[in-house]
Amino acid sequence: MTFKEKVSEQIGKALEANPSLFLVDLQISEAFKISVSLDGDNGVNLQDCIDVSRFIENNLDREEQDFSLEVASAGVSSPLKSVRQYKKNIGRTLKVKTISETIEAKLEAVNDEFITLSWSSREPKKIGKGKETVQHNREVPYSEIKEAIVTIIF
Image (tube, rainbow, N blue to C red):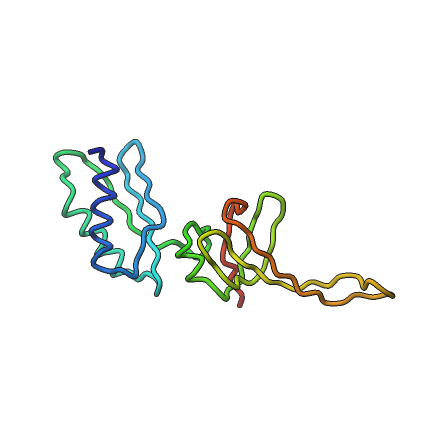
């Protein structure tokens, strides 16, 4: 079993204790610096990070492999990576970069294949002068999304 597999197994066991948490990203550098990024259906607090860190720390053998460990919550400016993160953010505004364009829109719905975005824009009238507000709805498959970040509005 590789070191990364051992770490993944321990993270899985640690997250079983708190099912509202889930793994967003796991990276292990060549110098064995372990970086774990977590998110949760109800957010992630400091104690959650401490609990997962202690569990991993106590169940890996430093005699076998020396390592450093960092457990953190996925930041607000971090790109969304999993369907579970998209579901958590329904109703919020996202900045979505696709293969061909960038859309800033409200996340309306999520399923296993695509997300549904809605936004309005001012466009020239089809007849006459001036502009009118047009409502747009679009389904964007995950395969077309390069990056999606929650936009914070104050």
